[in-house]
Length: 91
Image 1 (cartoon, one colour):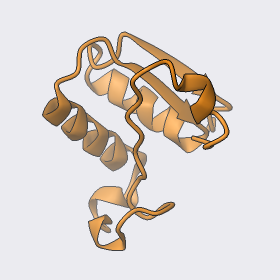
Image 2 (image 1 turned 135 degrees about the vertical axis):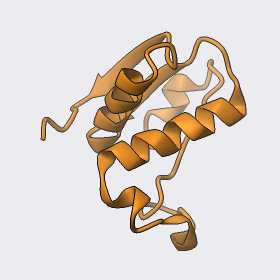
Image 3 (image 1 turned 90 degrees about the vertical axis):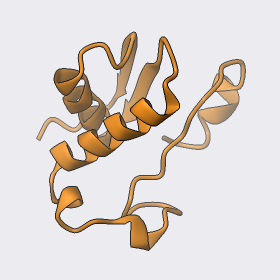
């Protein structure tokens, strides 16, 4: 998610995630097997959500992250109360 959007979301509690292999994420967190597919990233997202145990989450994803959120929602339909997909990558 672009940091340009963060001021617009400041009135909400936001949890941001740097996916392994991207941004400022710790390179050691990237598991070449798990993160070889978008389903692996979706499973990682669901693991994080289980740890956080936050109710009524809205998933906001941009590009590939939108598709990871969609895959997570397919695996766990109650994980998000809503989703916002910004320019989701269709493939």
